Length: 254
Image 1 (spheres, rainbow, N blue to C red):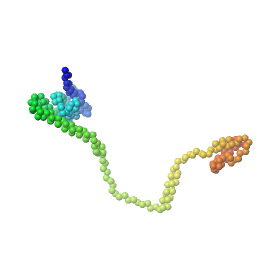
Image 2 (cartoon, rainbow, N blue to C red):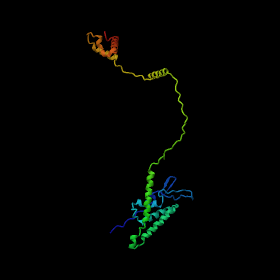
Image 3 (cartoon, rainbow, N blue to C red):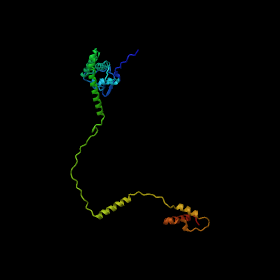
Image 4 (spheres, helix red, strand yellow):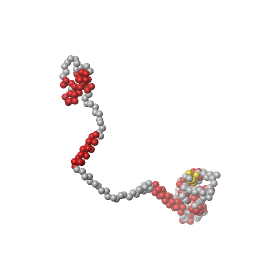
């Protein structure tokens, strides 16, 4: 014993907004809302026409577009049409035409047909299927075009007229000596703008004083030339001599 097949449920109004007012989605119609004639404009943006509504019902329930359950789709379509009528929305004539077309297809499919005629006659749904397939192709193409970047959409050109007056260049009337003198002044100013750098002394008087005391052990005579290295040059001689003077001043040498 097989279980009875469940018919797909019709879409409920609370699943999607049926109108947008002042930029906000309207999910339900306020009971105490009074709308004067022509005082409020309500725009349906969910469906753009009867084919869009039919395609939505088919795709939402994952139905085969080539084998549409015309009775159930017709019932769901009429539920939506009655909903728009209940909230006093003005229906476009094409919605009513599609409702009549669905009713006709449903009636033709319910009528019994002879076997020999059934094999030759076209499926009553064929014309509707072709229209749905064509609409879906155009809708997909429109979506693809809308996603592509639009050239110049965010570019604003500023037109400015250019002054075409020729520019006259005046050659400076200076001699070569004046040019060299100006160049020398530039070099001098560049030299004056250099930052002062404090360099660490390669030879320190205090360090040399320590070295001299280390060399003087006991009463042994030590020559002055042995207190510095020849590679230190004149600076080494001066630093060593100043170190000896400091030691004598502090009475550390006799």
